[in-house]
Amino acid sequence: MALRFLLCLLSFLLAVVVSPTLSTNSEGNALHALRARLSDPTNVLQSWDPTLVNPCTWFHVTCDSNNHVIRLDLGNSNISGTLGPELGDLQHLQYLELYMNNIEGKIPKELGNLKNLISMDLYNNKFEGEIPKSFAKLKSLRFLRFNNNRLTGSIPRELTTLSNLKVFDVSNNDLCGTIPIDGPFGSFPIESFENNHRLNGPELQGLVSYDFGC
Image 1 (spheres, one colour):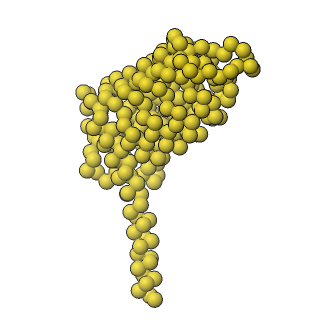
Image 2 (cartoon, rainbow, N blue to C red):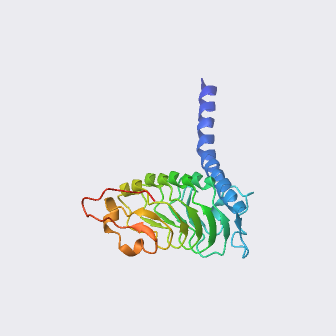
Image 3 (cartoon, rainbow, N blue to C red):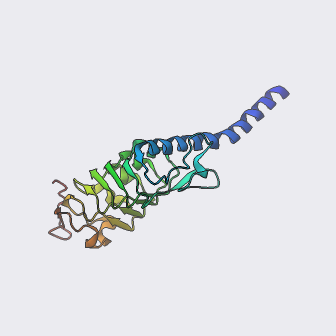
């Protein structure tokens, strides 16, 4: 019995010690996958060494006391390339700051898995395609800025359920359809939607028929 107790205790202690490492390894793998997709002419990602136990010592990466990645700060870093689905593995991420770069391609729908995300700033890049409907799952989101990209399609009506959303900016894209007015969208200024030549405001306040077609 004593031996069985000791074995159980050892298993428990190993789980406590190893589990954060496994988590941060997973997060490190996700960030290394991102690094492989990016061109970095000024070496801002030089410290991103995949051989380290976790990415918490990398520049532009912030972790909490449990060694979980909570911030990715690569705004205005002169990087280019694309984003991949691996970013959806950063389950503890709160701030995704990739603004003012030359990142292109579609915005991965897997970013909708980042349930702790507070801010997503992808403005001033070259993103194209549609805004993922999966972002409706980001219930903690307060800041969502996609302005000055090449996005097409409509604004997903599902985003009107984001009750904590305080700032939303999709100006200077190529969006189409109708601007929603329910939920937090009723308080966003018209400047958040301007310079989308096929995006229209509701014609009848309170009686609008949501037409998200383009």
